[in-house]
Length: 260
Length: 260
DNA sequence: TCACATTTGTCCGTATGTATC
DNA sequence: AGATACATACGGACAAATGTG
Image (cartoon, rainbow over all chains, first blue to last red; front, side, top):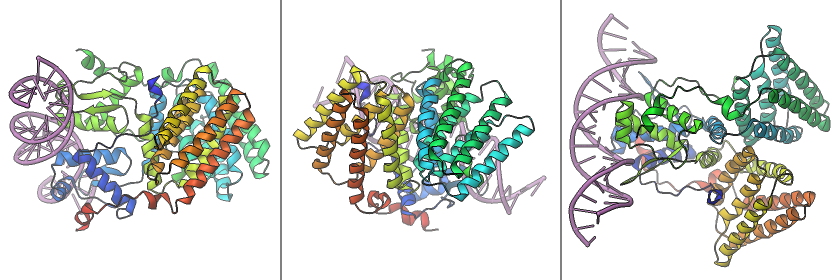
């Protein structure tokens, strides 16, 4: 009940030095002083400049890394580099959230249908030639997989991601990426059946055709049918996502942490 | 081209010990062995159990903290506690993405309208008495804020979150939580104007009324109007978010990092 | 109010692994 | 192969915060 209080804000109690350092670097990035590809000084050098210990600097770098602002390479010529991974971090956190909340397969597929239906509606006002080309190439790639008797799961998911990207709205792209990531994880735990991939490709071709012909209602309808069919396929393999997705950790830590 | 491939997974090159520790703890959380509220052992104790240095443990804790899985408190009785802040982390990363100019305010608000419109459609088939009660309570809380001449921003955002939760679909709740988190971050950087909160509450009351009367089309229409109005309000504060949000950093780090 | 214990935050010095030249 | 530069990791120490008696 009290758990329904909104999420949203974390109090600004950053009196930890490494948080402040991370914040300063972020500000420099937002200002454009530091751009993706730029290299930050090494840990020891940063420690010298900020007059802080290396441990503190390291934790600041962890913060920046986990927020998608830098990557770190070791070895000669390595060190922290400004990156642009915020979106992919959002995607992977989203996937974590799915697992954390133990979302059911039912919920996931239902939400996917609604979301992709909505996106299909958006695509028509924004897709360009390049987007259509991407879709065509994707279908070719998928067909090639089938031709060599392989599943085309990731190619087929990519079809939907391309559609989301075609809305020209990153928010849709992020949300879809996250949901499809979860779907991919589910599907990777399913028995392989090439005919499933084949069915999907047929739908993708029909959807693409509808897009080319600017038949919006048809495209939306086809998408709906496509996803409903896919949903039914998934339902035949029983179980919750929370059970499906769990990597079979052998629980080394389990005993330790709980021995108390 | 190759950059269009979906986000989703980061390569598993985690040869760093702290990444592995973080992963192990995450798995325990996913499995349900560790639940929000549970306390982890102290840093020194963890170091002992995992047979690692305290520094390594600390970095693992940073990873977990930045992913929203734990919070850390200092002092007696403090230490790491399992938390459920993944959504708020996603929200703040969304906000980072906005400032990084990866997402425009336009994109965010447009996406929000489409998503909430969709959710409004779902609410009718799933909301129960409890949900309606939550909405009523929320409006009361918001009104109380206004009564004492305060903004009701977070209360008003919560209204929308409650709607998303009412769909009984966690995916919608998560997506909405992330988007609203970003909206909240945006709004917190806007000049305070109680009349804005007031306007929103009026709409919320009308929407709630429509829900009670099972007038689906009306509710959707009201939601759309409400959000369009809110969007216009945001657009009046001129410029891009990236300009608005900059905290006037005095650039202490700037000179240092660039002196090379 | 005053110690006191616990735990994070921060520092230093040192050693090891790793990638590049 | 060897030297260099860097991140990774260890151990020990002290400061600062926070709750208890």
